[in-house]
Length: 87
Image (tube, rainbow, N blue to C red; front, top):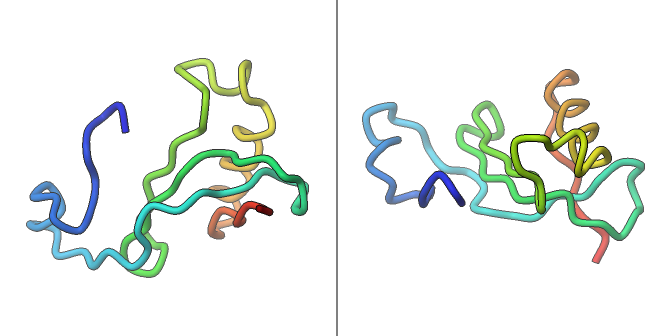
């Protein structure tokens, strides 16, 4: 990631005592079934803490990747995990 490496061995998460439950995985965009990768996500504590990136977007993510930004914000507001991509 641009912010650095995040993973099970990252010392930044050791003091929090969080268990990484999902390593980096791709996520898809809404509507479900589209063959588009929205980005990547890593999850701790069974999805209670997540770090997601939107593929191909910078600080203007809603402008450059509106479907990915919509999917990310919809999942955040609903409190659900990001959908898997169709490969």
